[in-house]
Amino acid sequence: MAADKVDPIHQFHINKLIPIEIGGYDLSFTNSALFMVATVVVAAAFLFLTTSSRSLVPGRLQSVSEMAYEFVGNMLRDAAGTQGMKFFPFVFSLFMFVLVANLLGLFPYFFTITSHIIVTFGLAALVIGTVVVYGFMKHGFGFLKLFVPHGVPVFLLPLVVLIEVISFVSRPVSLSVRLFANMLAGHITLKVFSGFVVSLSALGAVGVAGSVLPLAMAVALTALELLVAFLQAYVFAVLTCMYLNDALHPGH
Amino acid sequence: MADKNRPDGTGETGRGKQHEADIRDDDLERRRRDLEASLATRRPDRLEGKDDAKAGSMAGYGQALKLSSEFIAGVVVGAGIGWIIDRLAGTSPWGLIVFLLLGFGAGVLNVMRSAGVVAEFGQGDNSRRDQDDKK
Image 1 (cartoon, chains in turn green, blue):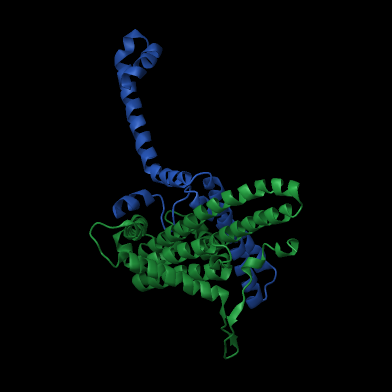
Image 2 (tube, chains in turn blue, green):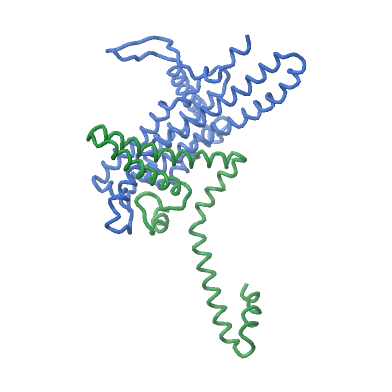
């Protein structure tokens, strides 16, 4: 009974909650979509409610919101300069979305949207799309100077430019794979160790005594996952800032 | 600091060459300042690493995952571009071979770049000066 319930992958299944089909495309409202909406609602409600009092001396929750604002603001200013602050709403939304999505995923029975590569790749594609579009808008073809490093011999230039282009294209891939792999691996490990607790305690008294070890591991892993949730949101936002910096100042 | 070094310098050159030893001390002092200055320009990268270390034992794991994902992304994208070119131009398997190798190069470049060994995109040796300008 207990053994067939332990399926570490089951938590990533997508279920259709409200089937919708428009023009041959499957646009169903799934559990993934539900948690995306939940993420946006939670993040927006938290920021709106905590800052609505606008007291000069912030309370606890208001200071959390202000810390998040300052944190992202400083990150962006350090990486992309004061010019980069026009992207603040974009970076802040991305950071809050990834952070809240990761944190919501830590609740039991909740769906982790960032553990699906298509979601993280969508976010990364949004970032790189912004970089490319803004770069060409602001600098025209001067943006292509990004791919030509200084001081490279002419006969090596075609090869170097090709490698730089591949390196640039690989950025959204590595950005999305990193977030997705961290969340997926973390949740699978957590599930496996929790599964050990269940299947060991089914073995009787000795099993119950032995299940203390995986239980302790599961508790430690939960703390680790909390850290990873923050860290990956931070890494995602920092790399976004660095890529935006390339769009603002290509090749000096 | 210079006084500490003086016995070493004079010990070698003997009593009569005090003046020469002073010059050598000055030279040493200048070179040490140069070294310190060039180390200081490298320090921001190190500090970023320290921030990661603050996060605890996760730092090594995070770093490993970051670097490996950078490398794999380079190879995968290179292979993907080669495959698409083969499909469009019918040059199989040469596009895949060439772009897989280029992707390997791009992966190594990605890893070195994220480890802070190579300059960022579009910047050469003068990247330090540019960074100072920004601030």
